[in-house]
Length: 305
Length: 233
Ligand SMILES: Nc1ncnc2c1ncn2[C@@H]1O[C@H](COP(=O)(O)OP(=O)(O)OP(=O)(O)O)[C@@H](O)[C@H]1O
Ligand SMILES: [Mg+2]
Image: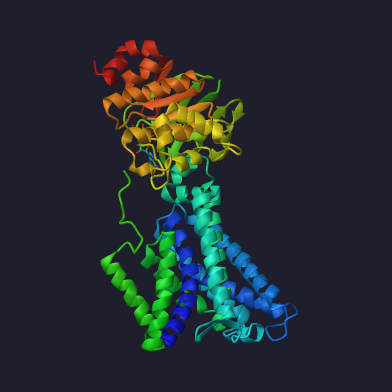
């Protein structure tokens, strides 16, 4: 039982990260019908920015700032940096191809993905960097729940993810920008006819999705400590899987899909073997696609009347 | 003149759609633009609104040359459109659709909402209904209400009666007249020439991208060529 609950916490941690990545895929797909293959690399860059801030502050063992200041700073820098990177990718790799056949921006996306991986390899080499989080926030610090201790870092990750997802939900449902995003996603020309500057709305969508990926990068750095140039590949693939499982283009779907994938991975690793976790994740993808091709929350492709 | 198009040439790629179109609408006037399928009526409205750029010619609105101005700018200056097929944001509520119509306006929208609800009391009761779940006639109200939310000086309407039952077509022209009587200039695109000419002050007839005919509405109703081509009598 204890073990089971411990895995629940693991799964929720991983799931939070996948959900945040999935949101970026889903939002961009919703508005441009484009699979942003470079999204995993935006997440990777976020993890490196967090690492950069940590290193500049003296490293986890001997930081010049208290952890309560340093960690938020890492998040903030990574989120802004990743957000701006997302906007730049849209501006230079996708916007010029807006009216080209749909395969063109897709190829461009794959190109950006390789480019960012190669750039990270050149800049940081293939060495795996470590956040060394336990030295900053000892894993022994945490909350006791019965016989179980949940480390502060995991609580921090889950709570931050929940706060970000609530904020996103409010933004999309309540604010002027959020409504413009939904209108643009549904019918770009009609949105333009209302005077909505759809280019700016699309840029804002990339910014927000990339901000979430940046936060996810720091979270993974804090919990699993392994930061390297190729880390965006598998995480991106799983975030994408989560988005598809939830119903791509659907925001609550991305959140649920992310949690589902995270939990599946944690339990597969715990009860089978960590070697099987990928197998289980992609089996879920295939299973959902067979039963509900448009995803758990997706509406079957309906005709516009 | 509130709106003046001068010798406008618009292309889609290499295809020359609008071929030297000149047209104007005075302050508060109700003008109809008639023409058969694919004659370029929607393209004319899109050119006026800046959704497509003309290769040559000019669009002047309220004394400002807006030929190269963004759609946002033109809407801020006082244009609004009821698009062909309405193009509502189906997964959004009535209120949200109306808000999108007021996207370029800042500040308090209460007065604008009130005016729309006065014109269409039904919408006040359906505020939180999803636009896509409404009937054709109701959607028509949302589409017109949405355009009026920006309190335009020129309302562009692209085939407002399309797909509506005869009784709703009449209702839709009553609304056009009501908007017109409130002092808003209207440029309405129609295939239903009879109906359009019965409410309009003036009319233009577009034929394969050229203005073939223009006159006062009553004169056009008596025009033999037009009667043969469009009025079916
Ligand atoms: N985006 C586009 N790309 C290429 N050609 C287009 C595009 N939009 C319209 N056309 C072509 O331009 C011509 C005029 O189209 P337009 O929509 O202006 O006609 P219309 O008079 O509004 O017709 P309808 O009464 O059917 O609405 C048509 O031949 C159409 O096929
Ligand atoms: Mg048309």
